[in-house]
Length: 157
Image (tube, rainbow, N blue to C red; front, side, top):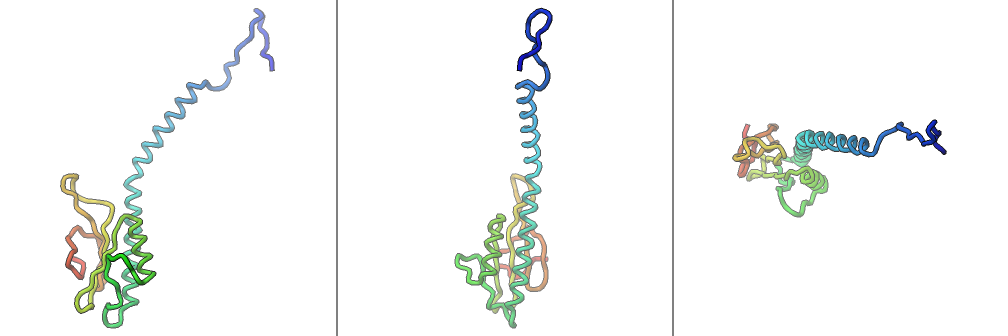
């Protein structure tokens, strides 16, 4: 398509549209805004993973109660590499995918149990971080704690 001639016999340059520099500036601004947005969504992602761990540990409690026949001998103690029950293995694997680790400990005799996992969100300062755990037990207690759960067979609340 030929450009229209002006009276001085030169061609007129069309100024409609955007220049390459204007388009690059727009793309750069969009890139900066999207990176700011992704950084702001980081904590929400960790909370979503923790919420999933809550649900999975609660399902472990439901599964443990189906094993109860006067004691919890049929409930496997975790962590271990070879989990025999496929339902318990699926729950433990999903908790691991979310960044946690399922631990199940039984009393001797196996009349009580505790099931817990560490969470992604940490409390405290960067110098002294506190690890959060979500804990359920055979007494019906559940909740988040920063207490040391090693050696316990019930939640500390």
